[in-house]
Image 1 (cartoon, rainbow, N blue to C red):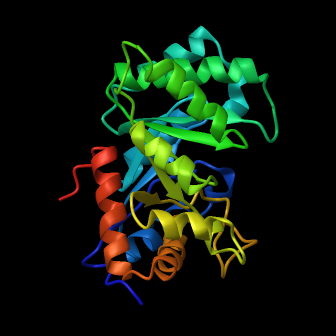
Image 2 (image 1 turned 30 degrees about the vertical axis):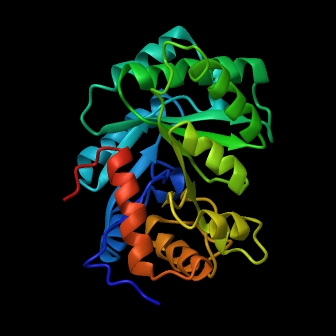
Length: 269
């Protein structure tokens, strides 16, 4: 099955195009994305510096939108000043989300209590500015769910005000359904194309209610695994998900784009 990309635009909801690996050919990368009818690429920042770099790219390329936030890898850099600088960028009309925020338990570059505090603060920043959150949860989905449940759903002034996406989702169908109750979608990357991927069962059961991403330059799909990832490769993830769900690629493209368009208020016709 193939999709007519001229009829069904695609959105890459997560690509780190400020990365050094794109320094010498970013224009070509954008052109290849446009060739497969990608209409928007969302760049999630990891701190103030990468947020500023992402906004510079958004000024150069109309296809780009930006999320601003402090990644859990950078939690030790957190300060009130850094937080305020991040917040100052939100007024830019290219900013469509808070992110990439969350919890990182695989590397544990920062104390978990500090990660949790910063996570909650940035979720509140999203609510304050009516922006969705892009959430990173490596080896930490259950804790993230617990934090959301305790701080934003139980007798809270912020009850039912959250929304966003758990990016590069690696959890179960049951976890995805729980997140849906809290206003969150999930998105899948190239790792769903890997042989014997445990995500295949999750995708099969969900069948809908998710978005597409590359997480470029990481998690490159088959057949390019081991090489630098880029937004145009999202079509391989699209085709694999279509195969898993036994659904036309046209329908998957239309649904995933519609979810992303609404969540990030991208104003695509």
